[in-house]
Amino acid sequence: MTTFLDDNFLLKTKTAQTLYHEFAKQMPIIDYHNHLPPDQIADNIRFNNLSHAWLYGDHYKWRAMRTNGIKEEYCTGNASDYDKFSKWAETVPYTLRNPLYHWTHLELQRYFGIKDVLNPVSSQKIYDKASEMLQGSTFSTRGLLSHMHVEVVCTTDDPLDSLEHHKRFKKEEGTGLKMLPTFRPDKFILIDHPNFRHSVEKLGIVFGHEIKDFYDLLKALRARADEFASLGCKLSDHGLEYIYAADYTEEGADKAFKHVLAGHPISDKEALEFKSAILHALGIMYSELGWTQQFHLGALRNNNKRALRLLGPDTGWDSIGDWPQAQALSKFLGKLDEYDQLAKTVIYNLNPADNEVIATMIGNFNDGSIAGKVQFGSGWWFLDQKDGMEKQINTLSNMGLLTRFVGMLTDSRSFLSFPRHEYFRRILCNILGDDIENGELPNDLIWTGKVVQNICYNNAKEFFKF
Image (cartoon, rainbow, N blue to C red; front, side, top):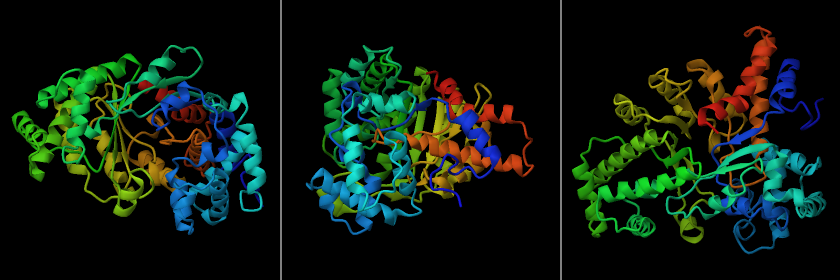
């Protein structure tokens, strides 16, 4: 019987074990999409205890705890940090076969050397040991990143952000870690959101000029993008239900924008035309800047209106949506490509039914200018688990070039989430190892090992030019 989480965890064959231990394991990490707080990296903070480092802001864990009958007081409420941890420890045994079970124990092992299984009996011992270790200088935020050999983290940042923490950190370049901002302007696309007008007013203040029309908005966003670029930004990101690609005129977009600024309602058709106009304009801007644009598509957010009212967004009430993606995505990418204005692009789907759609769509716009110009992104959110990663890898293999894939990311708010890269690497090596031992691939470990290292690190480094 194989021991739980031993050195060959998820590696079913000797070839898979060789690929992981001799090729994948030592590769540094480029985490090109996450939600880590830039201030905590710039300030190099230390966490008060294990709950502070592990449970704050983690809606994955909160969803599991609620499902296990744990009251909100122990998730986002006012319970003590240890009481929250004890309720998580109570829940962990019930996460059996959920990726949280693997992630929890990988994180305890990789950061703290704790090999005990977390449950109510072990919770106090684990909490005390990890909390004590977190007080050491090597367990600061940068220490945790260094421990996992992280070279680059790309945070996700609002155009309204002053970027003060990035500016502060940039003065310390040479520390071995790059922290770069990512431009996330969705609040200036979603014209039908209740806070749209307020966001535009705030952007005008940051820009130093009142925004009166659609053209002012584009100028202000470009000014902010230039500021991001000056701090090393190389990516944008959008979290949309689906791509907006309706026919529009700039005059119509301007009219709709002015109506909303004046407090007047607009139709769904006018809103869609505005969204399509600004998304296309941003796509052109990303191409001019030499950035990579990312699209996270298909999340049905804030389903529980009572929870949204009481707790706010990003607290664990989102799920997979089922919108058609192909037609609008094709039109959006095609319109940019028609005049050679299509930036490098990474597309992530949340609905697994869209795997083949995305994997075939990218081939329509890979024009040979660079390897893998348009990418099928790694398993995202509900799909960043074993089954989801395997399906993404297999679909990309069947319909594109897995060898040009830019690999995994954490998409996380936690500094303890970086074993997700290891999880992905083990899954990748296991798939390739199986193929070699089944005779479906030649037993060429030099070439296959190079492919593994490229997917783990080299492809991202070259693609994003870090």
